[in-house]
Length: 239
Image 1 (cartoon, rainbow, N blue to C red):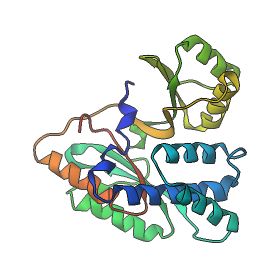
Image 2 (tube, rainbow, N blue to C red):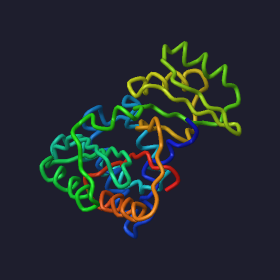
Image 3 (cartoon, rainbow, N blue to C red):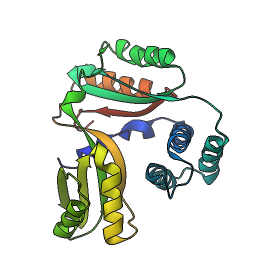
């Protein structure tokens, strides 16, 4: 698999208002996760991981606290998760994950990113069958066998474990995320995870060239300008 999973959202840093958008996206995700699974991070592993990731991305504490307080109130926006997919510039494959309070608006906005780059949005399943939906946990450790044993004890269906420069990266089905993380923590204590996410990882990659490069950049920038977009996954190599 290599380290290609790090392709996710990498181009967010290319826009001047990156921080404001990152804060907004984390705030919305924290709110939805806390509202659906509980506001106590100790009892809501997904929320705990999200908060840890937000802190690593230097999201201010007041943004995190505001989102949790909002979830405590019970009222507020009724966000729903939405996923769109299709073929982008150069025939690449793309999956766009959103949180929206207006699915019709969000679909129209995402579709426009496709049409304005001479591409076409597809129906659900158009390209997702060519991605693996995985839990990814990366941390410093040098004993691959011990980690595998701990995961097997936790009854985790491990997809792969990579060992690179003293860091292990565990891949497991997205449905096994909580079980995998809890099993590692129980076996090795508190862990400072370098990666702690659920992502779509492409099974194959494509290279684009010529005019498609500029179109692809435009495609990503248009999606990243949309408030409802939380993450963009694609199979373009070395962009």
